[in-house]
Image 1 (cartoon, rainbow, N blue to C red):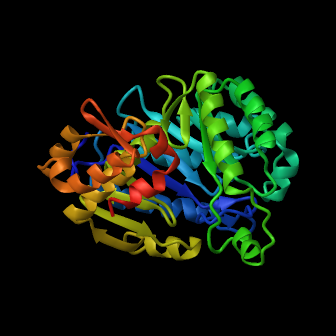
Image 2 (image 1 turned 180 degrees about the horizontal axis):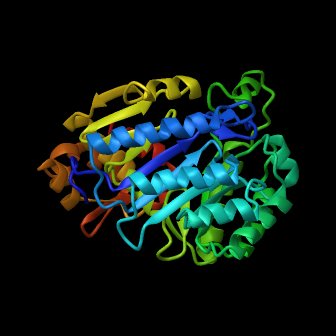
Length: 382
């Protein structure tokens, strides 16, 4: 574990542009057409410069570029952007994990070559499903042919650390459809899979449809059946479930996301990005032009607040228990000077008596039952 106030060793950078807005998406993203992309990259450079001046980085271990869809950048824009990243957050070690989110259909060979040249060594493709009708239902613009083409192009360029995102609990999705998607996904023999359940978020088309009773979602029993199926199939295929929504071959877990789950500091740059450094959390201004304008004056923070010791202890438990390895009392003591028992004894006792948590050596972790009721466990520490 890293000290709470140490310099971050992880960097998150947000590219807010995308080809279209998916029906379930509430991320800070904007359709690309007409957007001032190069002005935005200039704003990012100003924020990078201000950031490293105010808190010089430690030895950077992970960089993650998310969105939006970062791969909507043109090859020359991509090359320029990645040069900025290397300038302000230079690679300090051979084992840097440099991830970028990508949408199938936005990664031709020229684009991927720019990414490779710029230092990206891990790609996370937003696939969501291998059922074309379902992809259309949720507002995705790619189809399964685009998925295979994108993965093939990436492999040609030498990318061997690739992940795909899938979703379950989608409208009209059945366990049988999920089974077929898993068949196709696992046949790819990738290093990593992230599989999330649909959450109907406010300010999305799906939320509007839900309120009008026009969103034919699976039943809770069907959704549970899908989740159990996912866990069983991934385990059978040799993948370790290391977090409640993430599965990997040994050694290919997302090191960047572990930063979040271990409640460690990280830089957050770009419109709407969140960061956590020096005991403070911040959220950046969301709008593209307002973000650009603010970077010309100062840090583009919408909100910045100090994390109290109490909040930090709650966060430690909530995010740490997402990992299947759980949390260690030794790590909690290292950050806060007291034991988990001293701070959360009654809560831990209650959750273990209900069979939701279990003690395994020096760790406290979710039980098999607790994995299915994770949100209830996390909420208990608030």
